[in-house]
Image 1 (cartoon, rainbow, N blue to C red):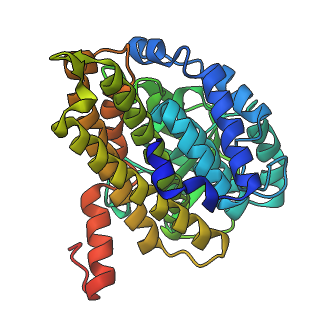
Image 2 (spheres, rainbow, N blue to C red):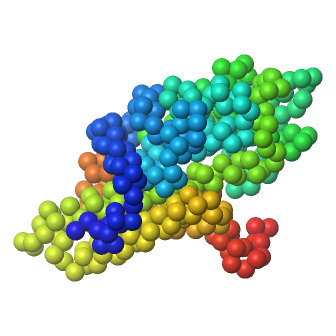
Image 3 (cartoon, rainbow, N blue to C red):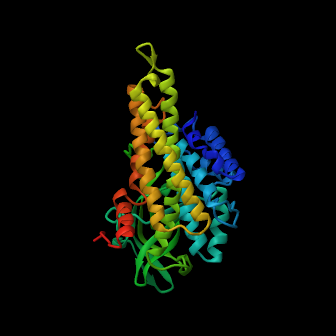
Length: 386
């Protein structure tokens, strides 16, 4: 029995939701799984080729309306994120940054002209976006960002840097958040603008099948219409982050499921002391405990999807999903690695790759500590951030 069959999970989904999930799984089977271990080992990924394939399948900005976007439900997007991350967390990150951060920012806060210019190409995957918020010294506290945009006549001049930016060195446009005299504002920055530089981050041992960059801006001049007109303050970037965190609640369960399926197959086939290791009580306890956590995480993700589709979801509820599911997925990956023993550290199996990737997912889009404090404030009414 598959772990999700223990709760008859598919019975909770509509036919359309199952169809979108299965189509995404097929794409991952065709274009990701055959090569992802090699990409991860080499630290390289054919980003433009993959984005074109995902665009053809309607996965980029799929939960947005218009401009070539598919306009699916939030739950369907979550199920697609689950299948993408079952392939690799880095691959899901590429799609998440494109749709839930860069495209969402333009779709929600951009002008009609900005939407028409960028969103159709981004939905097709012919244009790639990135999202510049985090800085080397401003991670969990984005209000302390040092990147600044100042007015010079009708233009804006941007100076500063951003760190840990997915898609940064292959992007055609960067959504950059900067301090201004009028508070934090978002800017559309074509990456061919003089003064823009993207430096690839090397020596990673996590998310290696994903492009991570540092962005640097030196006297980068932008026209007046480069600013996103629909928002001022940190509400803008934080709204985008909530979109991405929602996808992580589903995505991490995809990585956990892939690890558990691998460990279950291995335990049935691997024999020690003249019987499969799945016949030993300790192994069965591991498999049962992990299946229960996977099932609970999937039910939580699905509930968040239903709340989001009903336009009832809150940031605190998204924090519950991100904190719990990233934490439990990482624990599942580690336990699955133990079932495979020495074989669990090789790229012949996906577990060590997922385990290393999930260390990053556990941290980005809000660390576990920050989401703990968000939930703590919701429970007590007392802020412990300062």
